[in-house]
Length: 419
Image (cartoon, rainbow, N blue to C red; front, side):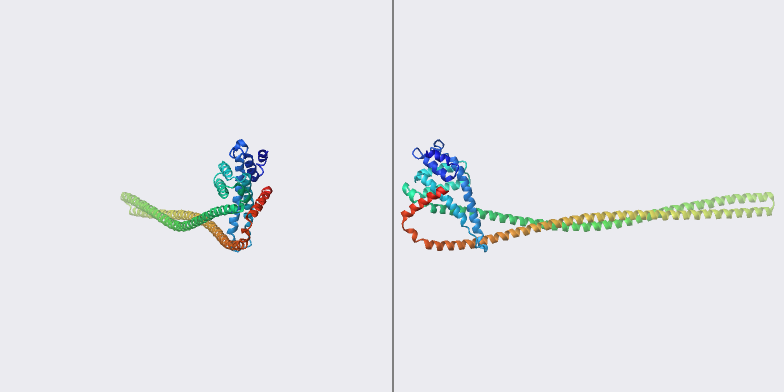
């Protein structure tokens, strides 16, 4: 009947589960395990959930104490302690009373529970620690264990160990957080320095590019102008030489023609034997020659003017081409300057973001420092309060050991039923 009742209470709470299982095992081997219906794996599953709550309470207590040093003296951190003490006392009381005060039975059964796969890592360590604490505080006298077992002292000791472990773990997390903040600060500083160096390098490259573009444009314009001038000069010289050759050839032809005409005139004069007629012919020939020379000179002047106009037009075209090239070079230089300015703005944005992250990290560090100072101050006040309370209550607790123990046992059983 007791075994059946224990199985029905397995899913209700760890307290009833432990008590029912231990009573069910009495009289036919405490470690009959699954064959007897104890099912320690279910006890381990329930205990794992209980340990999760215990750890949450320990973390809450530790974090609450850590905030007492910054002027927050009104915080009450005893709720987590009270909740743990109530739960721990109920669990230990059920284990001790369910085993009828037999220390070996408790030690053996909890050893099986703590080795279940449901309890691993820190949960297994806490289970083993609780088992060691219970078995070490139990005596060989079963009656004394049932009636006078000090659940409060055991749970207080176990609570002190738990909170110390959690305080150490939280401190390690705080140190790790501070390390990450410092690493982020260094990273932000490096990013800022890199951005500044990039901006300086970009400004230098921009200045070099602008200077090179201006120099290239100036050089291109000068080269184009010089090239146009040289080509125009060359064409003018060629045209001048051509005109001189044409003029010389015309004069030569005129001279040869005039010689022939003179010879013919002389011949005709001699043949005609008329000096007047010869003179008239000679005058006519001279007039024709003069007229021919005048026309040749006129043609030479027109050719010279045409050459000068061609040279002027060639110079103008070269100048216009040089101006276009200079304009294009200036445009490319402006585009390069625009790209440089865009990169500078991007670097400024990255620097602003890095500065924002650094300020956030500093704010978080200041907040953590205030929390730590508050914790130190609250710890001092809590120690002073506990010391005063201990002095006031030390004398009455030394008398009537047996009745008080019985009263505690009765209260524990009442608490078990409530739990």
